[in-house]
Amino acid sequence: MRKYCLSAWNFIDPIYFQFTRLKYIQKECGKKSILRVRLTKYKGRDIVLSDGTSINKNDVLVKIHLHNVKLLQQMEWCDSEIRKAFLIYQGVKESLPSVIRYIQSQENADQIKGLIGITMLYKGCKKLGFEPHPIVSPLYKDFKKVSLLPIYLLSSTNSLRKEVPSPMYLFMSKDALFSCYGNNN
Image (cartoon, rainbow, N blue to C red):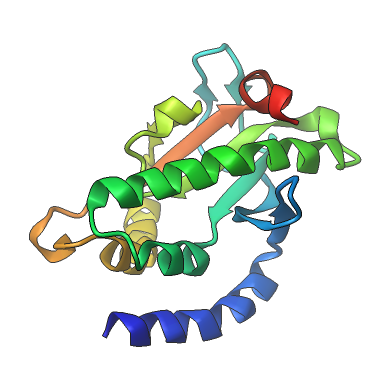
């Protein structure tokens, strides 16, 4: 069943990609990273990050998306939750210098305040430099929970026996990104 779901998702993903305005970013080695990105204007409540960066309505952020199909195909060979988590962690860590290059290539790079993502898979995000923040709007949180449920079910073993986590915003300021990952550039 899992292979059929992945095949269907692999078919639908290019269509989804076209409608979301996402862009692939490449690692230094020329391979596509597991992150896809686009610029967005933030529409949530005001948030102050731990380094003092204030994220307010209409601030420009880089929205990051995990390339879920690619990630799930890589995870197919993982035999434990720990290995899967490590695979995601390493993939994101290796991709963040590419996000710096993406920001630097933008005409409005000086206006970009940081990164934003939404995920149910946020354990370990602080080690990467992200700050999790809850989604306040119950309607939007439920929408994201339903839309992220397939990736959660396909990525986790025994997921039906576990409580499904609530999705969270993940933020990282541009300063934190450049500080942590700029020397890898």
